[in-house]
Length: 275
Image (spheres, helix red, strand yellow):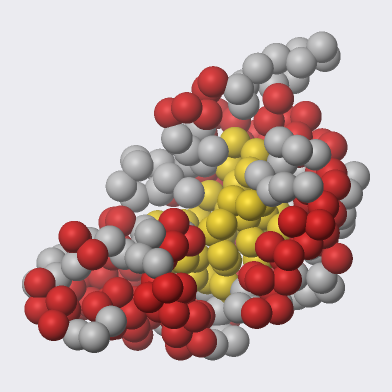
């Protein structure tokens, strides 16, 4: 999906919500455990309940890989069920030497046909560039993550006083245009968004940490939105596990609707922001 198509989708649906499809068997509603593929049935009902409220879906690969071959089949079925109507993100956090990254890129962009994949930047440009060789596909580079351990390295000051995560963003911006490169910036670091926007004014940001992790959507949007919206805000647990009964999908929809309605109002900020 191109940047133009993604931007049009956001303003058409008045939403920049990404739903994380991170289903855990132990947390599924009990009545789904009788299905041949409980995780797929769960994903299917969540997708049906939220299709019109979000613009993206993001399966976290760990939740599928942990199930072995069955999990991979579930991922393939889930991706096929989503179809072409949404931006799809393989949350794989890959990054290795060039030929290995090339095969990761082939797996997610050709075999599974995802629009984007999350990539770790620690090994540098030659581990990232193979993912950027696919026109119309996106790299979502880990810059400032939402977890507690992000403080171990990502804020380390560099010679010019800038934290490491800003240096990562600045360097990566020399590898690709904003039409193909996003950055992960966690909602648990609201004070960092202004600095991120100075470093990458035009790039999209994938923002985890809203919902169960406590990130405030309005404050983040005021700092992070640009003229094209420029944000995909991910919510996983708060939507997936809003209910645990037979009405779990309805509860998930209610949670997603509340977020979308807030986003509808916040999108009006875009006309006041420069790209």
